[in-house]
Length: 328
Image (cartoon, rainbow, N blue to C red; front, side, top):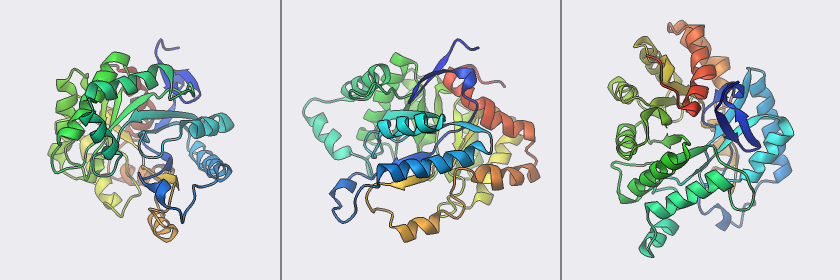
């Protein structure tokens, strides 16, 4: 057994018990303002749990034992719901503390708070409190810190969030997972976070599959962080064929040990920001089993070995959480 534990919504587990893991899936998301849409109510809790139960059963059929649900504080996060799903299914779920990007998160509140004396230190205090004592009075502790940037550059607000994440990560030893738009600014996220003292291997730069820029990918790899190919199935943003080609190219350079994969699926939405007809058009392949059912055969055809695929889904997530050195 390992000496390192990983915090899940139902308590700590031994790192060796993490098992096959999807690095970025969401049970529920609510865009800020969802609760002002009086024409559409929040989905019934029992319905959400039933959907989650079905999704998790499908994931388990492919050997998946754990997932990260990195919903930030301002995007409809419901840690008690995640804990209820985890307890109901026996599935291991890691939740997040963090704030979303400026253009689509709860920035209005936090910008106003900054004018009243708030700062990266104040936000970091909130993160640390959640990571050590739990969210509010729930006692449910996140196991990861979420940050996000939009673009075309990282402005003062998002820099503040990155600095807060760095302070909290160093204080608690909890790793960081990021959101990027269209595979941009991940290298800058890495530079800011490591510049504030976060070890590079404690960072996974998310949504790197939003671009096929191999030099961008390898820059993050050479910087020592993990590269998230975590939007498989979202062909509406980028064809999977391009994601497969880009991932295989990274593997061919000997960097399979620095890849994490997932889909960024959303199983239920709060509000009606994504109407049902739009959601149905998005989900033909956007399911949390798509990688195993359709992407793995394509990767094998592209020259990625079964051993390398196992490394990506079985070993890399555990090593990311433990903070061990990445094998070269």
